[in-house]
Image 1: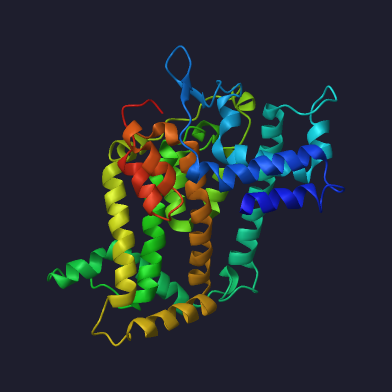
Image 2 (image 1 turned 45 degrees about the vertical axis):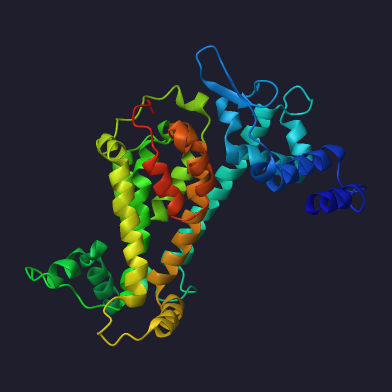
Length: 361
């Protein structure tokens, strides 16, 4: 019913203002979003002579692997509608742009969007005084003290050691909601490591993936957003460049992906439980009181406000990266991972548990 109404709208009220190709592409996109993922039966997989999957449907896909990425393929019809003239001009011969050329247009658009997001992220969260809390150049000493305390309570290791009688270092006593939010984001960041090291487009990034992930653990999306933009580079440009040095943490993280998934998943789960039930006898209030504290915390502290943006961006980047790397997943786990990838944290845990370490990635 939704699809029918959408098609009716496109063919009546907008028929005079939209070009026919735009209507067709939009209808295809609506059909893909509203119908195919949930109600259509799985299409047969076509393979080349080497047994590699090349597409689904009644005939093998003529597109290259780079042009069949799920997120890119989803955006192509949308951009062809938004910029029909540019899409046609993109073909140097003057005809309608091919799917491969459409992909280039989409990638350039997404790269521009990501670099713009990076600039906005740094300005809004680090430099400008308009977001809740203090910018970096006006940070207060108590904020620095809280940040150091949260870092010492990383993954609740010190509180756990203190609880069993080990008091080499005393864990700082902070509000459990602040500790829970901090460790939830750090735990989610920890889970990204094997995904980055198995990303099939990681060779576009010419720097050290080891350093990228380490910096991501400290500054989260400050470094992940640029990586998401760089990985969209055209491979033909990168073929002329020397390959980056293989990451040293890569084999450790990929071979132990299931362990990373369990540790990171447990950290995220404990973080949520700790936020609402931790330090029960510390006078931090009940669940409703802690929820009110969370609201006030986000509205008054720049660190908490930044974590909220990190959760939002991770929620977008996780299904994007997993969708581009479903080939790395064991056959038995492809369908669960494909569906679960949209669930924050859970989709990433599923990817790590079903990661096929025997495949060359």
